[in-house]
Length: 293
Length: 266
Image (cartoon, one colour):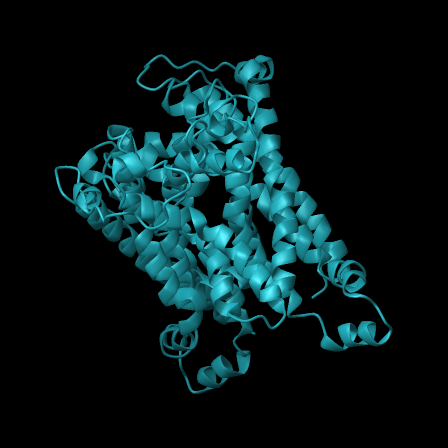
């Protein structure tokens, strides 16, 4: 190819990606760079006196008790991911067989994922009412005298959020598993049947290993998605009672827009970035080992 | 047997929705009655009327959400398609590193961007306007990524033949590739629309005035102001969910396809 043709191609290429590139620059790259700078300042909203403080924000974060509470809560929040994956695997296997109403059932499982997180947050808030809510009504009905206080006590609140999150993610994971299950060659399962494998054996020894790349992918992307989310928690509990549902992502939001500690919030948000980067690197390494195209 | 079990479990998945709708029609005294009254003794429409009328009406929230979601979606689909074609089909200097920059931006959590965006919008005078949601909403890295995958799967021979016939990239893009990509474009459009419709976090950070509120914010506002009116809360939640259920029923095939495709290939 001659040079002028290459040049023309390059110009055309920039013309095509230019408009989108401009937006990515304005709304992703520049803000990210700016946030990186803010991390080293004591910037507070409306305060004209901003100083460069070096690593003070990071030191403050590492000495902040609530930061560790938030970190711990974040890990409890992340527990929902493997549980939801396991459940959705079982559902997907069941729905992959020819079941009546297959399509309708898939749609029903997927429904929570498509609906607004805020609306379902409020529905669950009422369902979880400790004294008169339907869930505890049911539990007392089957003979549990002292059902948990769910969102109202510091011990149980994070687990109540986990339940909501498991319910929310299940349909999404199920759809991805269904796609993976359809890739499994029918002959393989046929062969197992002929060799006398029982259904449970087939499930554990053949299907589960075969979809392991999908499991790994769902695990990592689920962790990343969950760690970023704070809307559902902000809507239900605002981090309470106490700080028992303050996760890292919510902690950042509170510091920035409730206390206007924007420099400090920037520092914590980069801590979140580091965690996400670790998951992303794991996924990248995992893809090489697990995912066969 | 399997059908029965799976139906039972599926019912568990949608029971919160059923309870929500049923409660929105109950009288206040019946909300927490146990055993649960699934079908209210009498249909109370007053809670729904309250949600849809008055000064903070869901009509306003719907119109705001619709405006923001539709403009963002249209912009996102068009701009992503353009960029995705560039990345997939044109050889230019720095293409690979640029695409890597795009991908790395997917790693940046939204929390990193909130404060700087807030300050930028304040400075530009678009904080607390719909532009603060629409402008950034028109750019989606996921969209570029997804459509690029699709364009790569369109056989190169098609555009090569057009090249020989003297067509340029613009002609090929508009006349050949875009029409072929209709299903992928529809998938992105529906997924993107649902993101914008359900977006609570950005609205929470960038909107202040009640008359600008989107559906998730309006819902939150309604519940803060009526926090003892459980029937009203559930009527508001119903109003917040119905549009997405409709979109889902219409676009089910695309949504499921898009979700499955993006994860398996991503």
